[in-house]
Length: 388
Ligand code: GDP
Image (cartoon, rainbow, N blue to C red; front, side, top):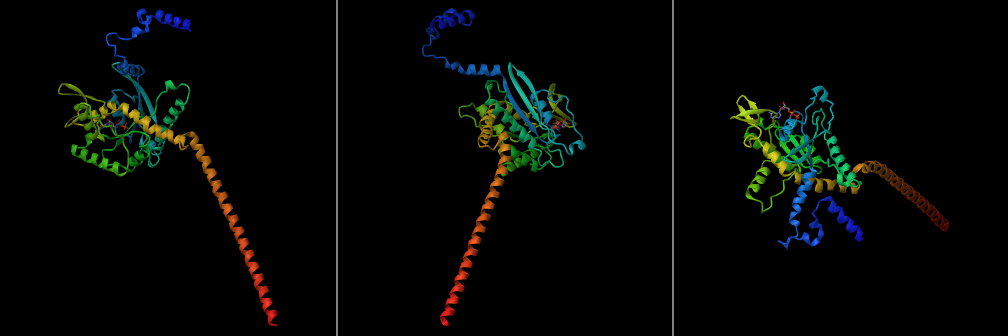
C-alpha cells in the first residue's frame, strides 16, 4: 500500500503538475495566511470552467404558418444563415403537404463560450387544406427526443449524452387575424405540457402600436380562457439589483413578443442597422421602440438555463412519469394495442357469463312455475275427490 502511494507521488512529481513542495506534505495545502479558508469559495469558478469547456446545448423549435417570417427571425436572432438552401413549395404542393421536421445545428462561439444551437423548423405547418392533425408530427418529434434521452440516460455512456430535447418553442401568431386561430389553440393545448411555449406575434411592423397592444391583450385573454400554459419567466430574487428587476418586469410585460425580422442591413443616421426599408421610413429590428425583438433575444439568452431546467424538471419528468405508468414510450404503444385487445376480450367474457347466469335463472324460474302448476292441479284433484 505504502509502495503504491510512493509511486503515485512519484508519478505526480514527474508529471510536473504540482511543484515538489506542494506534494511533500499535505499540511502545505492549508493556506497559512488564511487558516480558516478551506477553498470551496472557488467552486463556482470550477463549475464555470467546466461548463465553458463542455459548451452549452440548446434546442429551439419554431412553429407557425409558412410566410410568417420564422426563418428571417431566426437568422436575425443568431446572426447566422441557418437556411441557406431552402426551397419554398408552391400552392399545389402544399394542398396535401404534411408537416416536415427540419433540424439544423450550428455551433456559435462568442468570447470562448461555445453554444451548440439546434433550430427545429416545422415547414408545412398549417399549410394543408385540412390542418387538423398537423401538429401530430411535432408532438411525436418532441416525445422521440425525450425517449432518446431516457434511453441514453439508462445506458452505459451516460456522461456524454447529447441533449436534443426541445427546450423552447417559439409559436408564431399571424398579425392579420383578430387573435388566436382554432389551430393555434389546438396546438398550444396539445403541447403545453411537453415544451416551453413562447408566443410571438409575427411581422409586427404591419400593425400600429395601438393595434399591437390590442392584439397582445386579446391573445393573453384567449390563452387564459383556454387554460393554456405558456412559459412563465421566473420571479426575480428580492436581493437582485434594481436594473435586473426592471428588466424582468419589462420582459414579462412584453409577452406575447411582437417581433420584426430582417436579413438586410440599412444605413440610418450614419449607422448600419438591421431593418426593413419602407417608402415612409425604416423599421429597425433592434430598436425596442419599434418592436420586441431585443426583448425576445434577451429573454432567450437570460433564461436559457431556466428553460433547460423547466424542460428537465417539469416536461421531462412528466414524460418519465408517463413511462413509469406505462402511458408513454414505445412499450406503451404496443401495450396500448395489446391492452385494447385484452380489454375487448374481458368485456366479451363478462357478457357471456352474464348471459349464462340469466339463462340459468330463466331455467330455474320455469322449473319453479312448472312445480307450482303441478301442485295446483294436484290440489284441485284433491278438492274434487273430497266433494265427491
Ligand atoms: P417563413 O416561411 O415563416 O420562414 O417566412 P420567411 O422568413 O421566409 O419570410 C417570408 C416573407 O416575409 C419574406 O418575404 C420575408 O422578407 C418577409 N418577412 C420576414 N419577416 C418579416 C417581418 O418582420 N415583417 C415583414 N413585413 N415581412 C417579413
